[in-house]
Amino acid sequence: MMPSIFTSNKSFISYTVITICITLVMCLGCSSNKGEAAKNPLIIFAASSLKDTYTDIAFSFESMHPKSDIITNFSGSQKLMMQISHGAQVDIYASADLNQISQLQRSGIIDSDPILFASNKLSIIVNNRNIGKIERFNDLAGDNIKIVVAHSTVPIGRYTERLFTNLASQSITPKDDLRKLIYRNIVSYEDSVKSVVMKTVLGEADVGVVYSSDAQLEHVMDNTYTIDIPKDLNVTGTYYAVKGQREGNSDLQNKFLTFLQSDIAKSILQEYGFDTE
Image 1 (cartoon, helix red, strand yellow):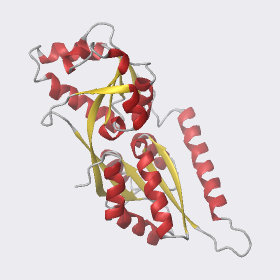
Image 2 (cartoon, helix red, strand yellow; image 1 turned 180 degrees about the vertical axis):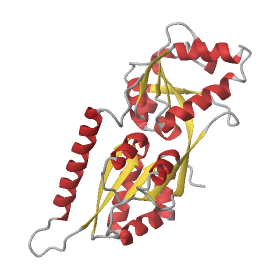
Image 3 (cartoon, helix red, strand yellow; image 1 turned 90 degrees about the vertical axis):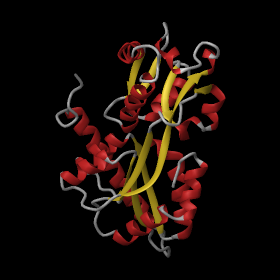
Image 4 (tube, helix red, strand yellow; image 1 turned 30 degrees about the vertical axis):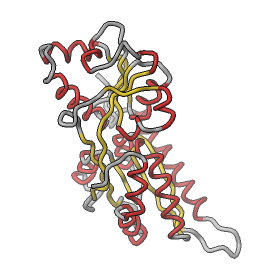
């Protein structure tokens, strides 16, 4: 059994270090040269699958609000939630599902209502060395197949479990038997979708379950191919953003959430394979 992240000294220390580092970066961001107006930092914690997208969104937002200075922290949604739970101050928290935000609301750390700003289907990517060997879902149950997925504590991990259940239910092989054979081939449970992508692209695993936006990245397309997933069996991941508990920055927080729902931000999200409708 994995040790509880709430009781692990190492975990607590790591979150404390992250909090200190972000605070230092924030202070540096606040400093200005003589004669220059100080920029107001906006600290954003966002799911790792949003890294490329939010980098572009942050750039666009800063260009429209020159006095703002966005500081980003990308990781698995559950890791970010734990960092916030341990005191990390954040202006905006963007999660790959609603569960993490709900936990922070129940604990009283966040009291704002989240907005739904994007969704994402799942893709099964296969390393190119398996062309002709792995072509459909049932092939994942074969011998000597290495599958990597995200842990069930991560949104993509929970979505993956639902996807496997949906696909197994349509197989001529008994559902429970097929699931057992597939789960037998899982060699690693990762703490973020980016780790799943990396291991599959590098060939450390044959198969990985990722978001469709990840499967469309150039370096992923160069090294992998996808298994067809019927639309009615696929799973949709939903992305929410919410104001954090950091005080004194309400105006900029509201402006960013408004911008996130603008045509400019939607266009960026769509460019990276997200659905905004």
